[in-house]
Length: 181
Picture 1: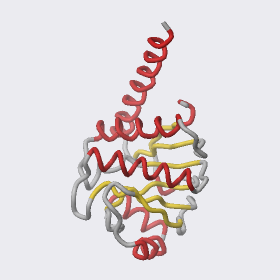
Picture 2: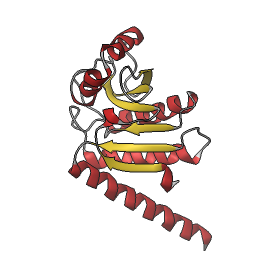
Picture 3: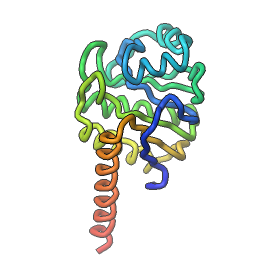
Picture 4: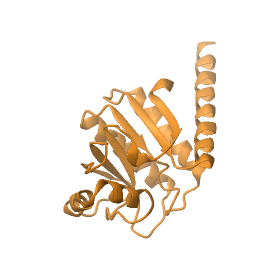
């Protein structure tokens, strides 16, 4: 499973994958941060599709086309209300919903940002712990997803995700060793 998760620094909107995940609000308004970058590069078609979907529950997710992006789709993970903040429960739920939508669509590659750590001010380490755990759990079951990227905007966020993932992999090995004795 560890080869299915890739952590890198870069521009999410430049990823050539089946889908990228947007750190969305539940009204699916593409304002600032990741959502603003997606709107600028992907074009107004993505916002028009979001408008047609309307509001979704916080903790949910919805899918639109990728507009002019390299990615074919954008999965909008609603981890916060418009103008609000992300909670651990909402981040966990929106991440899980995003993974389910990708698998239901038969997608093979998916790229996440550090959802909720920008405008919504969610702590980066807790974000990494929650998102990496949800992805690892998803990959244990039947899924079409073959590669999941975490595309992080800056070096400090990259380092936190790498530290958390290293700890998660080490814990997994410890669990396996403990189970085999």
